[in-house]
Image (cartoon, rainbow, N blue to C red):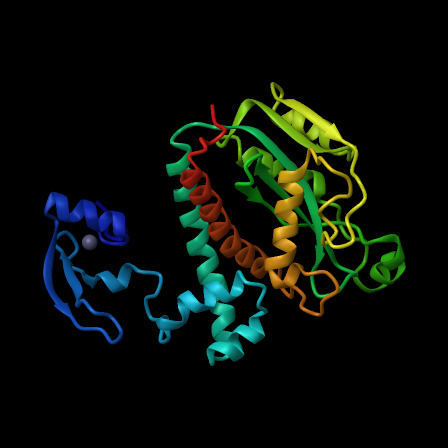
Length: 307
Ligand SMILES: [Zn+2]
């Protein structure tokens, strides 16, 4: 066993304790924690470590703010207002967004794996939302894939050409922007191959980029396209006019993102400054959203649409 793997993670610790190459070695008290933190020693490399070493909160000076920060960030609060409310520096919140994003991404994967239990979604919908980085001259596309029960399977962020209104100014300042929307959607669909059945029913709007992209990744799937209706005035640009919406799952999910992730609000001066922070912020929201949906389905006794 090499030095990095024998005592570097929680799962390695569990295995080590089972096989006996990691032994318990006392505990130490920690402020704000009821129980003492256990210490361990690895008999292979001699390294001493504690449970705290393996947690994502390692070396954090203000770990008591983590839960509050996570809740505020998924409740339409901006980073600077979160910092002001919690009473810490903006840089602390920026770091937490990054760390929480990674933790939530991993947690979401585990939650979905547990819920899906080796099966695949049979009914999915996807669409792209638009946002921007710093200014509308640098627009971003946000492809999102959900199941018909509104479980978010994945998303991606990529650059796209600006709106015709901003085209000249954008080109003068930033040059011609790449249009990565096809590449990004294909990458996203490929990454979701283990979650989506190869014979799934995939719904989207009538964007001309979609049919052959879907066909390339899921040749056996049934791709249904629907005319994209006008948005309701109060629907955050995502909920559509008219009664029955065949793309309700994706439209409602995008509306929820717009309403609850502050940087995706419409008519706002909250903007994304960095693409990676947008992704982290989204993972924080998605983890909680998926848990909420799954809990609701469990409570109502509705089975997941899986095969
Ligand atoms: Zn070791």
